[in-house]
Length: 297
Image (tube, rainbow, N blue to C red):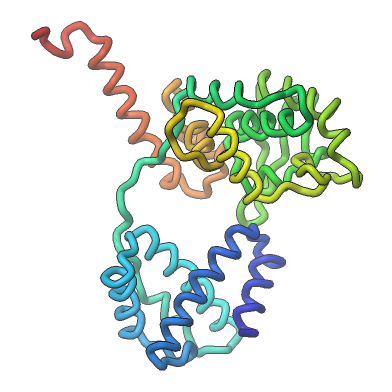
């Protein structure tokens, strides 16, 4: 479908969306177009009631959770807005549709001792082991998204000040900091592993075994591989390490506005979800530490 292909090109070159996000949007839009075809509906002539029936189909027949439905609506809202701006349709009917109330789901994160076990599972005597540990340390030290991580270039790093220029969502730049542990593995990787992996004189920091840029999917794959070499019984994702970064900062007393800036959140509301995790931690500490918090049996 030419219109969809043009929209995906627009997301890539005009909006600077990551490949992972673009593929997710494509999947959600194609699912909707397949539904319309089965119902003998024209995507240019969709009306409000058609969308309501589609939402019922997602909820009742596909058993999609609210957050999944909301994500699909967001993809379709963007697609129809693009078509309206390009005069392919008269107006964006999806702008009239509100998504279901999101499921309240606290972010999952690692305890610090679990992260240490992950770090220790990397064999830094090898080039790939150095790279893998750098990925873990940098995700945790900076809280960057995986798409931001794989796009870091060596020249984006100010090693004397231990700062990295990050190109985030919407092509917005921000500066993140890193500490001693991340500095140690970064220095080792640039001195040894990076030189061996960088066969094609790449500008990018995180490389695959062939010297090309490691993809977001590649990062997820290697994290799955690393956790299998530990005793940790949790699924792992780059975003879970980002959640750990934010949660641990708040648990140690960092203020919410600072965490917002470090994460690159446009709105403080996106950061506030971590306060629930932090509050639960404070409650646990209170009941375990305060002598008159609970009676002895």
